[in-house]
Length: 261
Length: 261
DNA sequence: TCTTGTCGTGTTATCATACAACCCTGATTT
DNA sequence: AAATCAGGGTTGTATGATAACACGACAAGA
Image 1 (cartoon, helix red, strand yellow):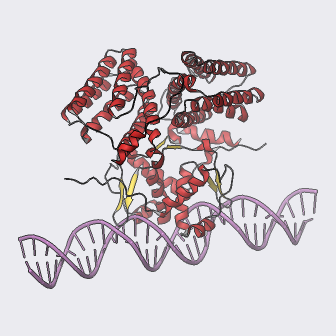
Image 2 (cartoon, rainbow over the protein chains, first blue to last red):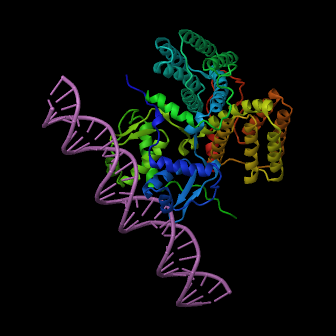
């Protein structure tokens, strides 16, 4: 068996550490928009790394839109709204309330998307959904293939809106939700869950096939409620009530250990 | 008269060009997930740059989750779902249908957010919305200050959901919509528009203040329909109520045509 | 005084080279 | 046959040097 070390072994790179450090300075307000960063040489000496490493870190921050630099002048902190990418960093994903909030956002998207898909779906979209459903039927619940087809179904629904951004956003949020589930580590499997989940998906597909927008969003709502309960979210206070959300840094080590084992 | 030079100072950085080039190879499927990239030395010679530049490009792609690398082995293309950032590049923003699609996505978010905000808003949230509205009243329509307060209002609504991701996503999408409008370049101003827009915002605020979720989303729907028409987008179909089942489509080349003029 | 041209300094952008850490393979040894 | 180890190849990091650019100081000319 190939052990799947996820992306948990992230960033032994020095440039990653430097970038995170600068990024934190910005996030916590010690570096305000418009401020000039120290020179690369200064940063290199203060961090105790080579200037090359600093440059890689700066290249990264620049690509994220957090800073901008000009030859001969220096590097400056950019306005917050200039961020050209939307990113959710790994640390905040670990927080227990992140999971709930991401799930809520995903639900908001999915329900609307389902309704829109019901009015715009093409035959090819329907076929893609059915194919994903078939893939789920033949794969064991919770397996990699199952998850892949599950995501594929939802992506097919999103693409049926004929709006490419819907799929892009939904997949992004869904992947973060999945990572958050992995971080929490509370997934139990049962054949019962497989049947229930499949049934929920089939009802969604039927409504979309029939062009029933209201029915599709209702079915999606039920599916999300079911999914929430399956991961222990809604009434089951398992992870819904975090005691102190600020102190979860220990969790990261736990995940790493789990991945290694 | 201040001449308006846009942000046309596109990355003269070599690393940006290299990163874009590799990124395009991945996006267009010539490099599939799991494939190994050429060595840094090979890339440096083929691109005609130093290995340092290649490393900056790779650092950037790695931070975006597009590739991963391991010391001693090489760099490999990551799975598409591993992308840790959501990005909408500048080129696709120029396309005429991008505008409509982004606006639709934004509307989907806003309507739901308004409803949620109505049930969760705190007094501080209300105060933030009122402050933004005041700012809009004193600024000329379409000015920088006006736009800033407009965005501030919507952000305040999003933050009233007590879900930080709502604000993050909404601001991101709204900024892309704004850029798209700028790219199209079709904004006409009138005092009439200012009054109308303000009225729409006030109705939203009133509904949220009253805790009326249905009213808030209805008011937001009206506002979005109005905003759509003000920027020359036909039909305020951005809400959850899909009207015509059949052929949507055929977007407006008019938007782009106006941009040229 | 005001303008203009020049120069020097500081900073980023890029290049080139070298070494360390690490992976993989294959021959060698046990 | 299995373990060990040497070698080459690749990424990670360090270091120094050069080019391109910005900015202020300063002197020359009007």
